[in-house]
Figure 1: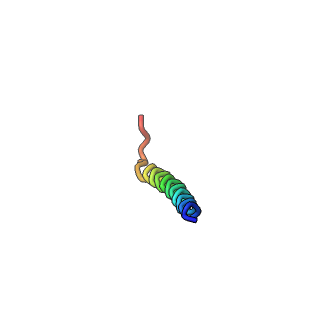
Figure 2: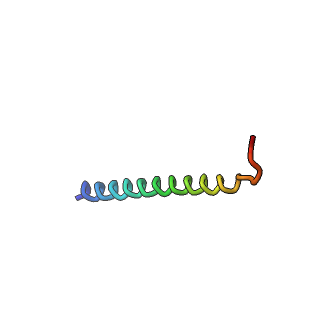
Figure 3: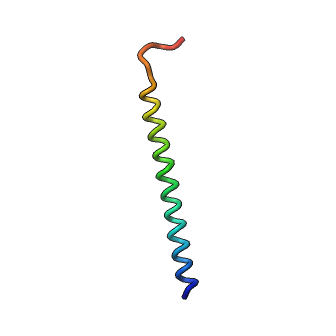
Length: 46
C-alpha cells in the first residue's frame, strides 16, 4: 500500500517538474523575444 502511494507521489512530482521546466523555457524565450524588439534602433549599423 505504501509503495503505491509513494509511486503516485513520485509520478506527480516528476510531472510537476516537467511542467515547470517547460514553462520556464517559454518564459525565457518570451523575454528574449521582447528584449530583442526593445533594443533595435532606427539607425542602420555599419
